[in-house]
Length: 131
Image (cartoon, rainbow, N blue to C red; front, side):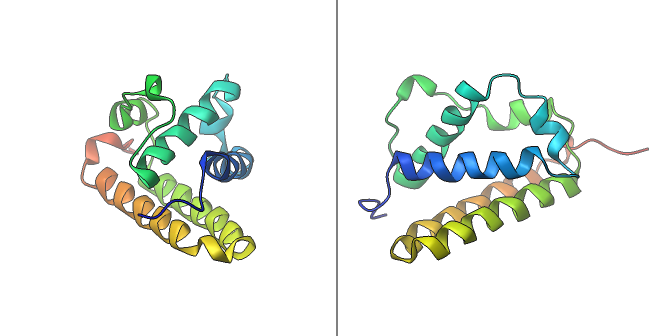
């Protein structure tokens, strides 16, 4: 991917905007409000996305990412995963409109989100089962 026109600051801004939206969301906000240290959490997530979007990471000490294990402990519901995807895509779309010259990166990011959604759905044990 050509990421010359997209840098860590761009990724961090999208990540911050997503967390601002997700934290106040009526359906999934409670998961995000349980995070006690946004000062380190948000940059860590931004570095995860940097790796996904560029194939490199500017802060390798953030590795490894144990995506499935971390989220298993949250006991999320399938609908909450869908809500996360919807909110993230809304944030991406708002940034895509503001930065049309970076459309290719936002398109790739959306593809990555779809990939991770499918990956999560392949592991039903990750989801809380309502009685």
